[in-house]
Image (cartoon, rainbow, N blue to C red; front, side):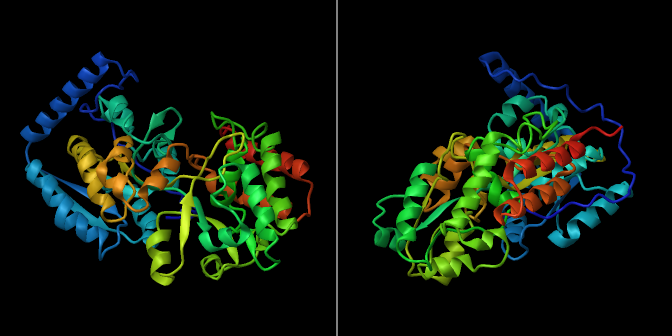
Length: 443
């Protein structure tokens, strides 16, 4: 799902629970045979501990669709888990997305947080910054082994100031979707794999007429622009997320924005990207649009609306930075207030096992495990494979508590550049300075 909702931190003092003695020491990130054996022993110890404790009930808040996903959770996943761990019961609580944040903050302020929750990836650094989340690299003695199983892009959404405050539960990204009929009319035999090939394709598509566009997207927010910035070799901040100067105003980022502006000016990119509205699926179905970036929700939904329209999917065109898309999805987090961390950890392990991840895949959830890419289910799935391939290199939007304010800055400057009202380099210099102020530690 497209994740762009700002997270407003309320003026609530969150009560931080005392770290429990059951929390295990931080694992060392080694992956040799000795570490693997130690991780296996640690997992066995935790499993045995969970099996020998008195019965406990853990609460799991989530926003799964009530009619399909939540029903699958309560009818299949939880019963199977409880059969395997008879001393652990799971209370499933469905919370609609538009109520989730407020209900969660109220529960935190009252000391009544759930044990676990499935939350939007952009919430993790903000909740971590407030002290609400447990450090999983301390809860799991074998965290290095556990985390190494995850796709790096989705995993990175849980990292904040040296610790991991969650694990990816399901994920998504965007890939290129191309119109077979438009490509055929333009004499394009295959999807472009590089930026240069993309521009060459756009020249051929432009020749079809002014009412046919090579590409379209919905705006200048990060979900739309970051894949281009990253693929050109640019970025929003440095790797340590300490400053934007040198990254957001780098030559590569300047080149990415100029590429998008030139694309609009030349008639390659639909001008709706700089403001306005466009029914991209409708235009695509009517051969007015050749290429778009879309997620795994596209195939089933588009085919239901336009069953006769043929299309293909490919990786995002690569530039000097590679073929880099954006990570979306949800993470599973444990709350520091929980007094049932061992039991909660077992449910997290279960939800992230390959067996259960593939069960969720049958419900349309893209798995987060590296091993899932090589599973027979994914290999034979009609469209998951391309998304998992893109996720190998996909990146997360900047995991920082001030991200919503940061994105407002980047969206506005992108809009100004594409509209031609500012000089690209000067505008990015100014925007980078504003981002630096948000990234600076509070004095």
